[in-house]
Length: 175
Image (cartoon, rainbow, N blue to C red; front, side, top):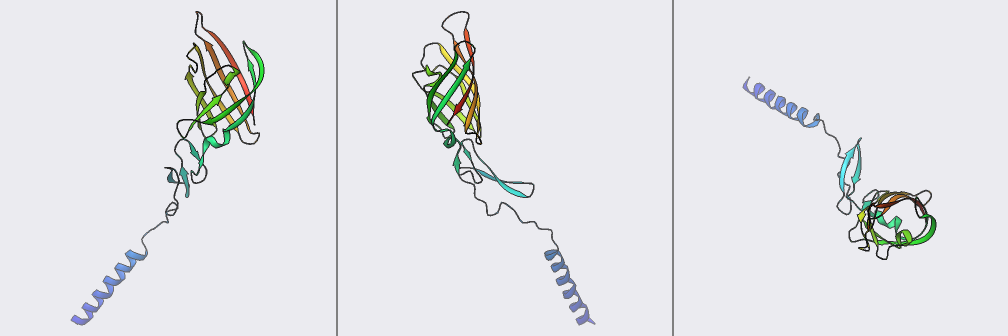
């Protein structure tokens, strides 16, 4: 009788162990084999793995600098509240950071570059005084990949006298 109890105990233990081992609920990690570039983080969204890119990068695996799409020569068409309409060219280059850009000949006025940042399709020009002459600029723009344009709204303020004079501009940049 002892042999039967011993044997049945072993069989019961083996059955219980295999039940626990094989019936455990396991899910495959969709991000297990995903390596995001440039400091991006792999995250699970609705059972899919996507890369959450750091500022300045985009693409499926964060492999592309966001500023790449806006670098180069653009034809600008401004419509401003005080200075009226004008057409001119600007050159967009790399800024000091991976999400930074520089704009040469902004408003066809500034001698020094205007600096901006790009995050995805949004271009932000923080308030700045490029030429240290009391003329300030600030604004935002949106890049459209379909038409290869940037639509901007920005203000130029002349703060050399009181009251401050503000030229409000909308602008379309074409590449």
